[in-house]
Image (cartoon, helix red, strand yellow):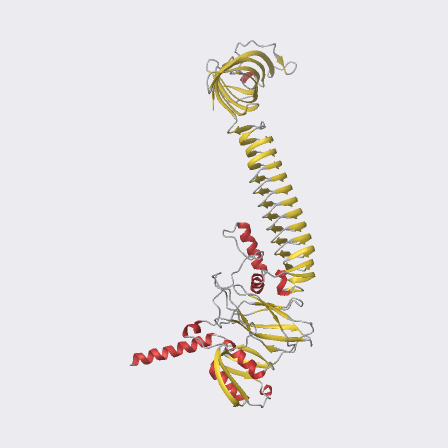
Length: 633
């Protein structure tokens, strides 16, 4: 028996704590008062809601008895009926404070307040956006469904627009121009398209019904607001790093109320000529900035709008959810959720989800999800998700996911994910993941999938296929390239290994040789060209530079052998070939004491010294020979 009593006491305490977890004004009470004085009515209300009142007795000048009967209604609603809007309500802790009613900022203003309620379930709905299009006055219902909106009474017609995700939109005419409470009922959109929602009157004044025990778990609708990015009402399934960055900037700059308003009003567009603002929500656009298109926008710090059609200037950051046309200037940057048509200048960053053109410039980085038409310039990075039609200039890196038609200039690297029709010029590397119809010029590396026309010019060139000869120290073409390994002999070094790579019209030569008899070894580099085969025969011309050294000394001095080799090449099979021909040689020895050919008997031309009486430098020349066996790779 004692256990049952303890359990009963625990349940009673839990119920009391649950009731006090809600603010006093949002607690649901049932009351039946007939011809009672106002003070006794307040006592009955405080007992039913389990809270206390605090007020100046001078406010209770009303002596008329009170008669009221409500069932399962919020305390705020009940007090509104008792006082008729003559007092202002505040809650602090478990107390309700009664104050003298606010005077409107203008004599022509009036206050509309109340709850937004689900017409089917009778649950109060939070995060509902309410606004009036002409004056741009707006409000958002709180977590308990309560809203408070100050409206101008001098408008010829007042239509209150009500929006919430997962509910049908409402447009309500407000006939009265006096402050009064007004509950609004919305119809939920069913999740099953085949089931039509049951319509309700948006200004229905019926009381909230007493619900089952399950209803007491929550007085709020269970339909959450899904927070999207600042420049889109819907999120991609797998957002990229740039998308995540844009959402981070947007959420940092915008309040929760503004994000909710943008989501709820995703089908509404308003227009105003001018916007002047300090921060989002503090300016002429108010909280509705994300749904307003302006011709001109001037922002002291951060501006926020749905679109700009002529000019926008921001001291720090400009946020545009839709399109921007004209000129946009941001001291720090510009964030545009749609297309930019005009000139966009940011001191640090510009980021766009649509197309951009004809000019975009930033001190550090530009990011564009769409296509760039015109000039894009950044001090560090340009990143484009679509095509580039124009000029792209970056101090460090240009990256483009699709086709480039024009020119990319970068201090370090250019990367293109699609075709290139034009130029890539970089201090270090150019990369084209598809066809190149134009030129790649770099200080170190060029990479392309297929070179259709134009050339690769760089220290290293790599391509899957190339119709034109690349120019560089080392070039590699996979499909239609020219590669072979050669074992040969000549009058200076009797054993030589040579590797050729590039294309037949122009290739690179890497070679090394040894002559055991004279204790001479060499290494060298050269360039060559070979004609197309006719009946398995072809002609080649190669020019090489060799450094000669004694095997016992290593590299001690410059001993430069220049060779010009006209060769006849005979293909012996699918991959084998034989080459033979004369060589024209010019030899320069910088120090005769370290000359590996000093005691070698060669058919040399007359020797000439570098200067009168100089026995340490000399030039000589002769005609030699070369023969080799090569294997195609």
